[in-house]
Amino acid sequence: MATSKDVAKLAGVSHTTVSRAFNGQSVKNETYEKIMQAARRLNYRPNTIAASLRGSRTKTVGLILSYAHVALFMSIMQELESQLQKNGYRVLISFDYGDVEKQRNALRTMAGARVDSILFMPASYPRAAAAEELKWMKSANIQFLQIISVCFEELSSFQFDDIGATLNGMRHLFQKGHRRILFLGGSNRLEGFTRAYAELGQDPPVPPNTLEDLTAEECRAEIKALMLRHKPTAVFSISDLVNVAAYGVISELKFRIPEDVSLLIFDEAFWSTSLNISAIAHPVQGMATAIVRQILDHAADGGADQLPAAMTFKPFLVERSSIAENQK
Image (cartoon, rainbow, N blue to C red; front, side):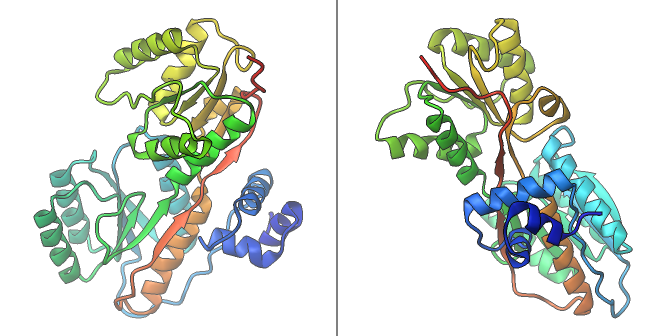
């Protein structure tokens, strides 16, 4: 079984630097990507040592996710469940579909199940509702941890820097000579696209399209129309469903990847890995390790209140064979 020292040796960095990367601490982008690539190659899983518990704890954690069809959320769920089970915890799982009322109900159901901690992806609460919800959380004698999104500054949070990762993905495409880049989906990551062209001092030759509120069929039709109208040299697709649709349209148009058009996607999946599609990958293991450590520390302190922590983890580029030098 690979250790963090093995990762350090393969990445050519110190053991301390590897620890910093997996703990969400500051590491240079280039170094961070080397570490994550090495961890992937070695199938490294961080080892979190269980803290000795005090008091009457149930060793149960509630996990509330927004959607079941998002591969990233499923990866987070599997990694958290694996690490928590190794530490003697069981995990209760629920879905709220991004709806405030469904989330409030799920939170209360989990609380009624006497969980020690609840992990959730905050929905978009109106200000008054958020204040009311926070008041209830503080009275519940449960550890609440936010993942992916943040609504409550008073609670610990664990996020990915998807805007920074989008910016780095765009820079990579620029380095390959691409300027006519079709950006598809992901309004929450659009800022990275905008900042990339601002660095070049030019407007995007191809306007981005977030493809919001479209059915799968409408999404494919829109992508096809955009491809034919703008003739991009590269496509940067930002979410699971859009990734599949974009690849399907490229295949339907009989465009070759990367000879006719380069393709970069956000979030890895089995199909994209098997097709050698370059991707922006999330450090799920590192985030899960930090979350589990927070849960164990909370338990070791007997459930006492902790100062809120705000950790951000940097996604990294996995370069395969779907991006070519642009000769056009």
